[in-house]
Image (cartoon, rainbow, N blue to C red; front, side):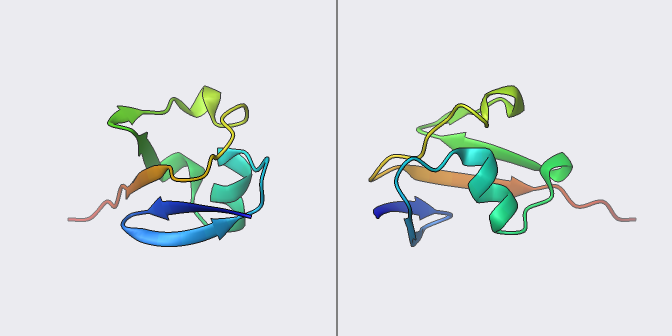
Length: 67
C-alpha cells in the first residue's frame, strides 16, 4: 500500500493503481472534475496511464451547476 494526499486527506491506495480507476472507485463523476497533481492539471486523456505514487498530493475540483 502507498499513501497519497487527496484534498488534504491522507488515503491508502494499492500500488500500481491508475488515477482513473481510483477516481471511479471513489465515486467521482468523470465529466465534472478536474485533477491537479504537483501544481499541474492532469489531462483526462492521461488518467488511465497515470499511476499513483507514494507521497503524491492530489487536488480534485468538482464542478457544480446552479442558478
